[in-house]
Length: 439
Ligand code: XUL
Ligand code: CO
Image 1: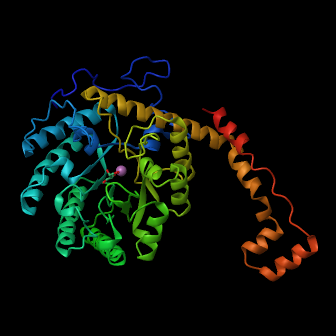
Image 2 (image 1 turned 90 degrees about the horizontal axis):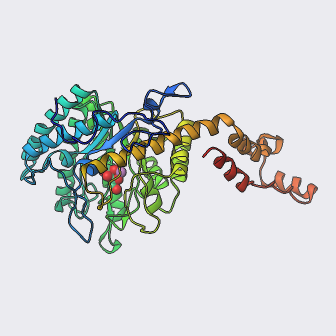
Image 3 (image 1 turned 120 degrees about the vertical axis):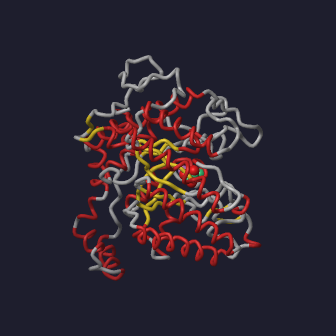
């Protein structure tokens, strides 16, 4: 049995229902309840992230970390990392999330040499494996941190220095191996430093080719070790670099197609990254689903008044409704899930705040799921959409779509008619009201 790292929190966060006034109970997330014939647990596939929840001291550019984490002795030792792993599983178990996700360097300290780093990681992975077996909690995805160490300051797979590329490759190889060993259902590539600060010193074409080479190597290695997990690319336009090559869904799709990687990757979409790219999350989700490329989501939100990557817990029901509507429309997650890439505020420094944050995020997504399901069942939104495009199902639309007519035929037709008919009202406000009927 694990030690009690969270003595003030009950053994299990239970579903208390919407009338519950207990902050340590779910109001909407009822894991076993069915929505459209499938449990909430299976629809949402919640995942807790190691980096923000268990390894983030809550500093900001103006101040040091504030987090009280009694299990950390500040040594940065492997021993401390192993204790933290036990704590992490106690947290996830009490919360009742079925998954977690990590970077290699969140779980174990980087050593002085690559060999030492590998050894440190193995020592902690041993504990993670034991805890997974004890609790049944699974790994949603693993990843390598290719952005914190000074060697990666000018990029990892897109470094101007081939030595650094080689080091990144060695690190990803090991991170993939441990992800495989832990039965991870996916592996994520987020290019925090894969971009540039200035084009004055950057050969963008060459860097993009190197990134593609790196990902092809990863695909080859994945096959060679029999790792079946899904690969994800996570778009983000900036922070820490000025321009990141994986800017948004459209840029990622273009990159994957250009370099013959489309079949091997899906996207892991994060709300705060969509915001930074100047898109709504709904836009990013829609484009990914339309291209059969949505894999998983990093659930969080930004603050419109701050404008940087604040990684806050999602509490906005419109947002969670839109996310779940798209996920239901695509037929649900297969390998992916709702992964809380979110951190508590610097002011929320007590361990129990980690519970409040996740309970709120899970309840917000549970409500979003129920509402999205009801909107889809209602059918009016989809009905309006097909009605709006009805002329495309008629003779003219079909002749255009199937390539039977060209500019000449269309000019002849419009000459005879004099002008096109007017497109009926878009009914935006009515549709917004329809969504609000369910909120
Ligand atoms: C950074 C971010 C990462 C990725 C994993 O903004 O989202 O934590 O999710 O590397
Ligand atoms: Co993320």
